[in-house]
Image 1 (cartoon, helix red, strand yellow):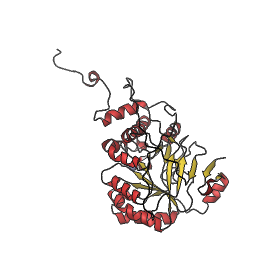
Image 2 (cartoon, rainbow, N blue to C red):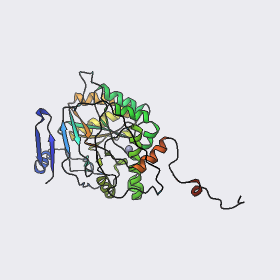
Image 3 (cartoon, protein in one colour):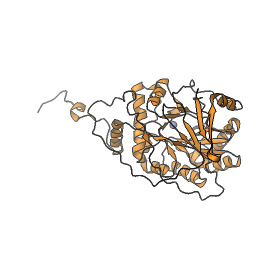
Image 4 (cartoon, helix red, strand yellow):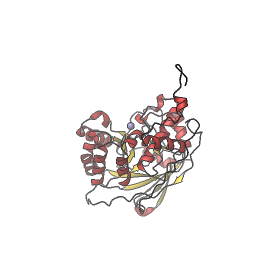
Length: 358
Ligand SMILES: [Zn+2]
């Protein structure tokens, strides 16, 4: 029987909730929106541990990303299970202390064990219902982006809130200094592919490469190992890719509540969208975009309204860091250095097919 182990906040008592109790606990929940695809099954087991007490935060680490020799073979995606060795989480950057006594703050921190690639967010995954009534998780996609991501960071810092970010690999390569700010401010960072491609429409090998390139690019741009958390662009997943992420021990984050902020374009509409959906659902993982200007403009007031309505913010942390694959790290280091990533010798790229031979 599947069990969810929750280290409860008050008194740090260990509560073990059986699947039966879990189902009963869900009975009063408002109906979730129609799934964008069939509910997916993942192969994980006990994985969510929560605590209100922050672990002591050690000093920022120095990260050594070793650069392996450029592979001479093809850039084919890894064999099943390759690179899935899990690494203990590295020391975290020291987050700035909260100076706002009226801040929304973080009410609970949960640690996610991504072994087996668990899925979260009831739009697509029904297995793990770890939020209590009134709890929300803030997630931001598609950054890092000038002006908008820094504005989101400022709004979160003003309310002492921590969020989870799913940056695009290309954007991270273009704006590594902004991604570093996200990490330095104590937020959790996963990845969201290299180019925000629709993975459901790509050949499997290309789709896996998009995931790996994104993870490597974001990790290299951040300058430190990140969380093994992934979100599909437009939540477009396939069973084969869910299985692959399971082999790679990467957690998949859908959403409970899609703000559709990318369609709204006005801050007041973003606020209204989130608050209305939240009132209906009572809790949830909220999907927003730090890439969007309207979202960046909405966030200060949205956080005030969340606090005024009694919602509590839950911060996600990963038990382990992502184990990126060396061949993709090499490729992405070249991309960051402004080089092309084809990796082939000139003789196989340029060939004389007519004219004089010297
Ligand atoms: Zn996206």
